[in-house]
Length: 331
Image 1 (cartoon, rainbow, N blue to C red):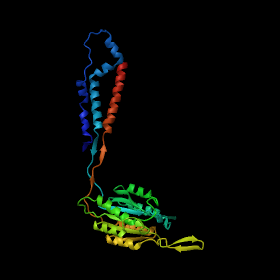
Image 2 (image 1 turned 120 degrees about the horizontal axis):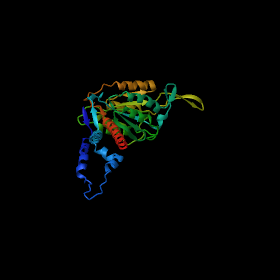
Image 3 (image 1 turned 120 degrees about the vertical axis):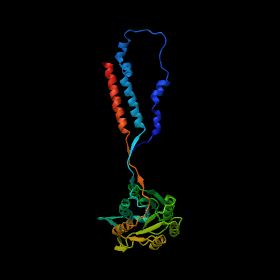
Image 4 (image 1 turned 180 degrees about the vertical axis):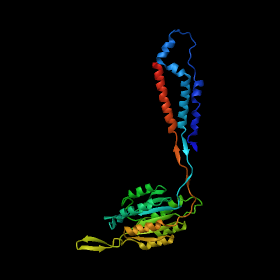
C-alpha cells in the first residue's frame, strides 16, 4: 500500500489560492498615459502573455501539485516480513587485561596473542548469531559496555576488532564484568519476557581488581535467571628463550579455573578450556548449537520512498515551462 510520511504538509496545498485572494492586487485606478502600441511592447518581453495563457496557468497548478506530492513523502509499504529471531540475548565479556598479550596461540601459520585469537574466533561466532541480540563488554581493571544488545552484528564485530590490550587497565575485574552484565541484561528484558539471557565470559587469569567478588556477582546472575558460560583461555605450555637456553613454561599458571567453574555451575552454565584455536572454535561451535528459546516473531514492513518520481516530474515540467516562456518571448 501507499502511505504518506508527512501528511501535515498538505496544509500548504491551498497556498497559491490563498496568496491570490489575500494579497492586495496592485492595480492603479488613477489616470494613465495610454500608449497605443502597449500590446506590442509587452510582446517583446513575453511575460504577461505567457503567464496569462490558460494552459500556462494549468501547468503552474500541476507543478505546484507535484511539488506538494513530493514533500509529503509518499512511500510504498510492502507486506510484513518475519525476522528470523531465535529469542536469545547474548552478551560477550572479553578480557583485555595485560596478560592477553601473551603469544601462545596460532592462527594459520602465524603466532598471535590471546586477544587476536579471541577476535578471530569470537568474530566468526558473532557473525553466525543471526536473529540473536548480541552485546559486548570489555574488561580489565574496569569493565564497560562497548555495545549494548543489538541485532547489528557487524557493528559488534567491528568494535571487538578495534579493542586493544590495556584499554581498560592491566588487571582483571571478573566480578565487575559479571555485575555489569547483570545490570545491562536485566535492564534490556521486557516485562513478562521469558527469555533467559546468556553471558559468555572469556578470561585468561584470576580476579585481581574490581569492587564485586566474582562468585557474589554470579549469585546475583543466577537469582535473575541469567546463565553464564565461562572460557579459560591460554596454552598449558610454551617455549621461551632464557640465559640457560630454551625451556618450557606454563603461561596459564594464573588462570583461576576453579572460580570459573563455580561461576558457570552456579548459574546453570558450563566451563570450557581453550588451549589453542582448534579448541577455541569447538567451544564456540558448541555454544552456537544451544537450543533457542521460543519468542514471538518480529515483523517489519519494507518501505520504498516514492518522492523522487513527483519531484522528477516537477523538474521536467518546470524546465519545459521555462523553455516555453523563453520561446514565447522571442517569437
